[in-house]
Amino acid sequence: MPVKHDLFADLSISKQDLTTRRNSDRKLNQLVTQYDEIDAEVVKAESGSLGDISDDQLKKLKEKRLLAKDKIVKQLTYPV
Image 1 (cartoon, helix red, strand yellow):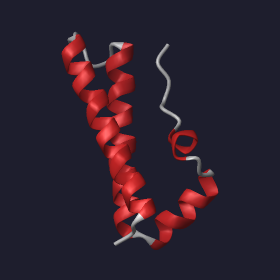
Image 2: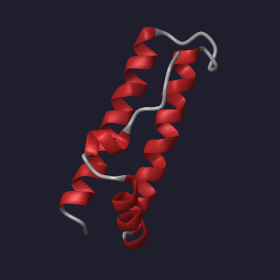
Image 3: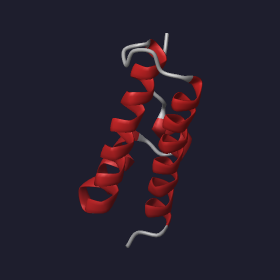
Image 4: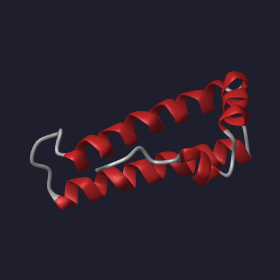
C-alpha cells in the first residue's frame, strides 16, 4: 500500500521546526504546500486512484516531487 513520503526525515528537520520556518517564510510555505499536493498525487497514482497510469507518468510525477523537494531545500538553506 502506498504511503505519504516523509518530508521531515528527508530534510532532517522536525515538524515543529518546519512549521516555525513556514510561518515566517511565505515562499517556503508555498513550496511545502505544492510539495504536499504533488506527494498526494503520487500516492493516488501508486494506489490506482488516478486510474490506469503508465510507469512513465508515475516516474514523471516522482521527478516532479523531487524537484519540489529540492526547491524546499534551497529555500531552507538560502531564504530569499
